[in-house]
Image 1 (cartoon, rainbow, N blue to C red):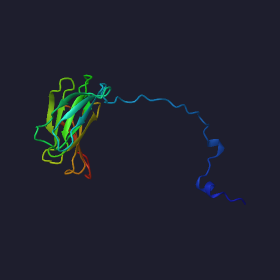
Image 2: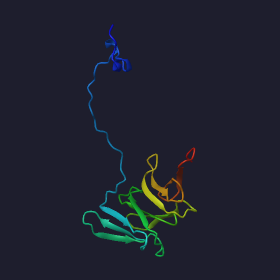
Image 3: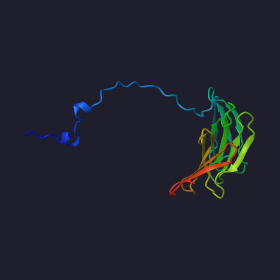
Image 4: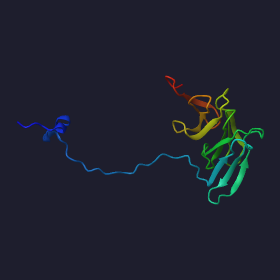
Length: 177
């Protein structure tokens, strides 16, 4: 009597009649979804804490500074977070700034005119600043994503480009609201 090996007992083979014939695999490339990386040659840097609240805009081809925007009052020195995204699909990325500490203030500037198109508090009552990003916030809609600072454990909020709240996710809560 022949004893099957341990592997044979753990992983029995199917009878030859039930095995499917090998089908050759043909890999294919899938089209990726649209990314919100701005088509322009622009990048932005927000000022660090301790300095004037400025956003410096640079030409990515030459490295030359092309503009400077002051998103908050000059008395604010808590640092500026900034991101770029074409929220209105006009080909020019909007400039989205948030206070890195203190007030949860978010300001959106039109990419072409640099005029303020939205200004809102992402987390009213918070004093711990806001981290920001922008992109698809669901159903193909573009918007702003704000993450709470240290005072609010793991809260993420989604906003329309005009600053209207869409939804909020809270960490360590039984369900998302």
